[in-house]
Length: 310
Image 1 (cartoon, rainbow, N blue to C red):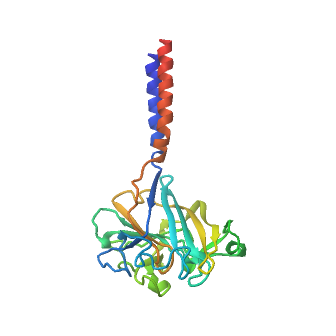
Image 2: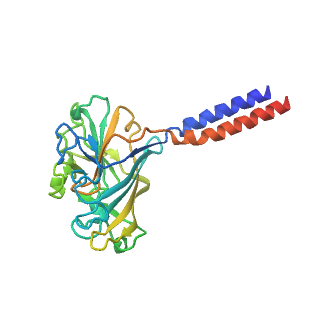
Image 3: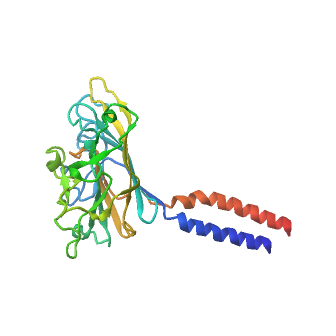
């Protein structure tokens, strides 16, 4: 009897814990991709639809890969979007940008994290919600950031006076969230840099009537940070640095909770290297799988102890 009651208690406590922590999920992406929207062109716009391609294909990555003897190296190593609580999210990105030659922009070359959310599964661009997290910008008041390899920027300023790490949204007008027609709520590579994939969205539009923080959220918790991890010198070529971008931000409780969503992320303003589309992995509650072994072990201990008592 005691064994049965203890086992029941363990099960109830376990499921209670899983309910509390099971909402923590990770979304990941891998690339590179090429634009593959209905207006399919390698110049974009991609309409948040990508076609996986090989980095060795010159039509896939416009700028050459790290270690190239000419051109500019851009690459995105990893992208993870995590839901930490009902309203707190974290974005983690590791990417490379050149340090010399054409496009010597460093963090200014980061593309923003753009999100297209099909809330109802209608597959209609005019009914989707469009968001963007500002990543491109400059390190302010810290000259050592562009010199030392292991250095975290203490004060990062977003491009066009926008708040770095903030979640912006295309304001709804009428029955459609799309107030200006895709991709007008974003700046494309032609507008930002005048080269590369000219029509591919890369940055949040600074026009407040097109993108506003009032419907999104500001960085919270650890806020937004950019760390320069390492520097790779390429004799006779283009040297590059590897950066990690970490952002915690708030969002409405129902953010990305229905339908499907896709992202558009470029490592540089001219959209040389792209990651486009839906998450590459199916989100799974991390805590649930971490706790199952402990739950099973505890259950066995309780059962054995109950058998010994009886």
